[in-house]
Length: 257
Image 1: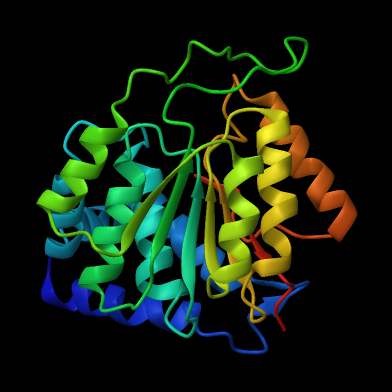
Image 2: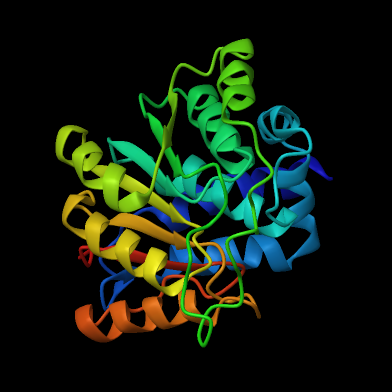
């Protein structure tokens, strides 16, 4: 990549994420959303991020654990590096499976120098039963994971800022949120209607007052109409506008500006 183009990209991304009054429209930073979308749709910028040494290092720690596409992983990286710059608090993940995205998040915030803890919530035994008329998945999905192995892997790489929380969301999320710092990013990857709805409802009151990020991994997946319905209900209730529709659905709450 020519040095001039690289310099332009380095200037463009942080500038677009600055919460200038002209950027904030209907409670979202439109320029920030567009900058991340363009970063993933313009090959030059995608290549720039994919070859970032920090990104490569964090991605390598995931090994074969992650289910996220490259574009979604890069999008999370962009939010961490540029979107969270002026926010202090912690990150919560609903649905971690083998821990891939949680490991990536923990490695990235550590490398970026953020004093942020990642709380990764899951049963680590498969997903709960759900409404078969709405949700495509059943309880046998995502059950092949060793919680003990996850703990050992975290210790091996010294990810002291990563906490795996085992149990149903209804049992673990609220006690955790009541005693932690404000949430600057909620990564919601639940697949099911009830799980996604609960994750939204329990987290909204604890999001950072300057506008924490809600990132939905699976609401646009063909097998996750239940998760999409939960997001639609959130939008209707709180009158939110998306900051991104590709590759994730991304919202800010409370509304910024």
